[in-house]
Image (tube, rainbow, N blue to C red; front, side):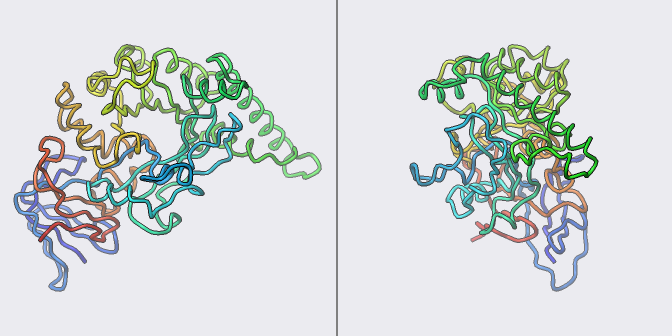
Length: 388
């Protein structure tokens, strides 16, 4: 059993508890409040004058799929020979031994969504995982958590270099539609067969994967920077009545009123970077704050390793500097991404029954560049301690 005492607890589920305590047992939070009593043999962490937060969550990364300091041998996020690869699974490519995971939990990031890149129109399954462990199977929170799709420059550039489709935005949309229609027909045949093997369609792993999207078991995770690409993503999602998140959403601030009407969540970033391609020309740290004030649920992301994963709290801080409310920025790297990807029953806030993923900081991690992580706890285990 573990007791954290005397901390200023930002639960992300209610008011800040000053000089509060958290009791942890068997990897779960069992009590939160003031003046808690723990068994005499409980391990105690004194968080006096420190900020206690739920572990940070990055809702869009490629952590462990593009390994730190390695070229082709550690690049496993884009299968750039076929624009349609829904059957690929991130968990088969993640290397938990990559240094990026240690960077993450040392900075207080305890959970991430990681998945395929944006080379293909349909990239494959993304997964939600913890950032500490040696075997990916033991780190999974939810798998799969989404189906990666991509619009805009990246699929065009990749397949233009191969002199094959898609070379235009029209083709990107058409390829996505075509495969959703195929998956719909495949699913209808399976359902009409009613278990009769002689009437079943020939097994197709790609269609099986897309069937999960059509049945709304998982959402589309749409890479879309430019306003027109965002609208195309929404258009197709409506056509097939699919769930969708808008990932990157770089020009979201230019169409904020429209996005508020649509009511879809957005993962905003990576913003701590240069305008490296045409569709990033309107890159701004004002975007998350503008969308948030319109009532759109957002998560702030690094797209690691595009931005190193440890800079997630800095990205939240820069959003605050550009007009976002501080508490909302903290929620955008804790409870909001958890809610968006469907893992809030386990992570994202400090509440009884949830996983004990808790970080103690010496200061405010989104306001103070000199702030250091004091302790990181994942599943009730102290995985990093800067106590000495």
